Length: 82
Image 1 (cartoon, helix red, strand yellow):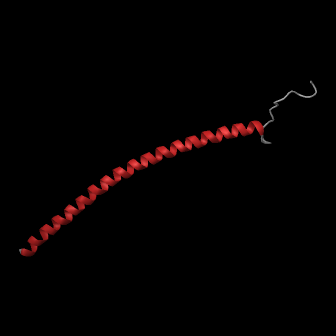
Image 2 (image 1 turned 45 degrees about the horizontal axis):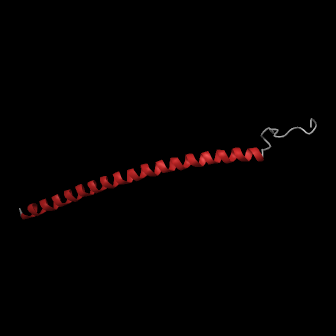
C-alpha cells in the first residue's frame, strides 16, 4: 500500500509539471506570435518603402540615362528647325 501511496504524489507532480509547461508554452506562443506579427508588419512596410524608392529611382534615372531597350524621348528642340 505504501508503494501505491508514494506513487500518487509523484504522478500528481508529473501532471502538475506538464500543466505548468503547457501554460508556459502557451504564454510564450502568444508572445512569439505577437512578435511574429510585428515583424511581418515591419517587413511588409519596409518592402513597400523599398519598392517605392526603387521605382522612383528608376524613373529619375530613366530621365537622364535612358536604357537602350527604351525608346528615346526627345527632350530638346531639333537643331534643324532652329
